[in-house]
Length: 241
Image (cartoon, rainbow, N blue to C red; front, side):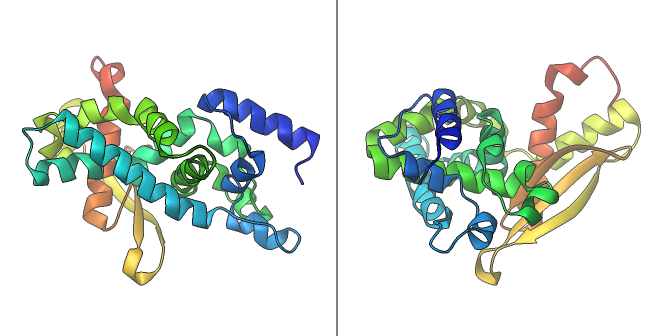
């Protein structure tokens, strides 16, 4: 049962998302981390099953969009665009923009260790919210939500720039600006052996610039470098890191 305070929180999030759930319990479940459900009363539903469903909806929505938008692209290039757009790092970034972390229900352990800002949890929550949206509203509204959030990202990575080596680009930039090398650090590995995700940060002069996730260390480093380049953007063009 959702109390009045929680209901107001969910309604605020709906305004941020630009949607209205028929079943608020479904949205609440999407925001319930397994650590919270474990500590709560028996029968509390958590969001992992919704995350599983949202992952499928996300992949289909982006796949259909880029298939129609780029009829001249072969399968390999479409797959690369999709992989970048639905990456854990990209989803976490979008979840932060939507402030999903503020509305999460977390267990004490996750809360105390910064889970509300952890990229892996935020990415999972984005997918869980999408899964809940699909069950509550159907595919078309869910697809519209996906494209509202990620169509611009598709545009950014759909040029041939996305096939470049982001680690090399970032290293060259750092060497040119700061006369040093970026440092990559593995900070977390999660998931079962057959579906592991590696989270890696990239730092310059001891300052963490960005983080990236991937199904292997190489992919995670490339994603970290990609997001470092994006975060720097115009802000860093005229100065040192």
